[in-house]
Length: 225
Image 1 (tube, rainbow, N blue to C red):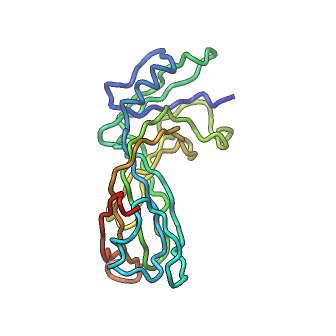
Image 2: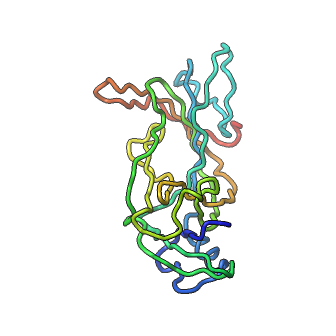
Image 3: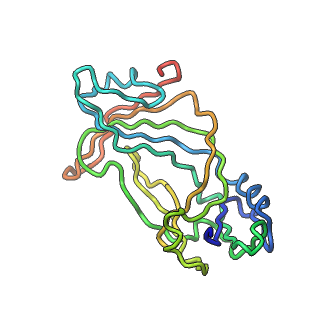
């Protein structure tokens, strides 16, 4: 049996209260996050700043002509959750699978916060590729493999926003949410990607006074694919 709690991210005035149907939640979620970005990170090998403009728009990298591989260390799609503009709605399934009850609604920024993984996690030279995407999310549920670890009773304090420092960014990005320490999954449909992508070459040295150095960035368009 599916875990009884269902989560919806949408502007505060779009979250229904009381008894609702599954379609009510789908419609509400459609008013929530509509954008995402694809992110890939690679070891830079011997990549030079001058080579950035020759890298492919679609983020697919093969070994360099010298044979040294650019090892992929991250491949993710991150919805733009927009904690400033969205609220959380929590709903409980009933005996009738199409009828749910609203348990809580509150601004997303009132959730607990936690920093999670940081990419990259070691010193070196790296390439990052980032491309914007359109996105449509379905209501969220605890990941199926972890549902047996999550209590069925609801407590707001168990909801946590995850923040991570990604690639060459110098500020944290909201990369997901958990309930009772387990990931909330938002089934997603990806739309057409933007026609441009951004490649960056950067260095991480945790022993230096300034640990992150962005060496170069380059926008490439679809013709470079």
